[in-house]
Amino acid sequence: MWTAIKAARPDTPLIVAGVECAPSYPVVSTTWVPMNTALKTAAESHTGVASFIDFMEHSWMTGTGNEGGPTGDGNADYFMSSDFIHLTHPGSRYWGQHVARLFASIPLPVNKSGGSF
Image (cartoon, rainbow, N blue to C red):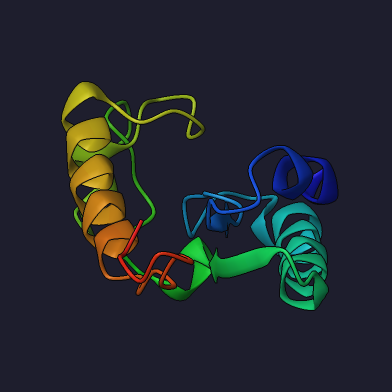
């Protein structure tokens, strides 16, 4: 897939983002960590990928609660929905602000005309 994207848009930097997850969701270690590791390994070994963003390296969501079962040990009480999969509306805004800052911090390569993309 990444090869096809680079073939169609060779001058566009390809940035791959890893698995997004809540740190205390039950399947993080059994499902999402191996999936994220495989994605990261593939992205870092692909010559067409300019950068990989590993969301698991960032601790924006904290705690073990959610809006339906707050525990008082982190921001998940407010930002995580009762299903512990989806974010609440304020959680989406909070997550999006962090993701935008993270994407903005990635240095983009210089294009062939000497300018940035």
